[in-house]
Length: 368
Image (cartoon, rainbow, N blue to C red; front, side):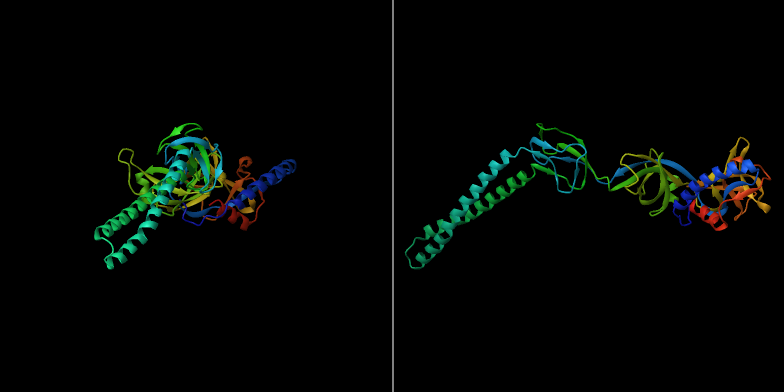
């Protein structure tokens, strides 16, 4: 894992495209005139690298739920697969006839108990005045007070029942708990569902992360906020470790980690590879991978020397990170290494460097 601050790969990508076109044009001219071979160069540099291994990972959504019914009923409508919904939008509806009838019944009970209260409250006050004048029996006043207390209790019960059935009526419309896309129907129109029955699967594609499991030996070299390389068959990018679950599985001897990724570049369910360190980072000499020339007898690079003449230098490749790879051999930091056009070179051949010295340094840094 690189410790140096990573720069944008845009500069390097542009140079690769321009260099490819330029090399094609200059190669034809060079062959016709037998002149110097056009090349693009970089500077070998000292960087902090750690040996890594690739572990598999999967892109998941932090919001991935199977939405269930909260009441029993028959499905009258359900969202189509692929429907994009906002938080609170309906994803399914149940037949609400029974709940609407119960709501009407309990609303009537509340009205009835309120009517009793309207009668009993002033009646108690009237009997109190009559009792003070010895014009009413104590038993009648006590009975009316008791009836008033019962009426108040019955009113509370009726209101609670009305609130309960109103809540159940509202739940016949199953709503999205978060914004997302309906990815699966678990039930269909006309089916009866019970409380807890799964109806649809809802996934939020904007709240994604990567979940991966790595060997326990790598746990000591990973921390929250560490930057690692994530790649797939289509792309690669740097990703930040969001969290590490500090517990290893006793059977697999693996631990789990979660990585932040850009939702614009990845799809839920996509398989990826994560380069995790297996040792402490150390300072090494590194060059872009494209500078390596791989042959049966080993790897080598072309170094540009005096009078723009190149020499082949045998190297041993080591740890890699992104576009950079560790090399050991007769090389020093700052040596000018051919990164484009080396395939057709011969030792001692003169070259025409297409990029400037500053651009060579920038190209090497962009590979980091």
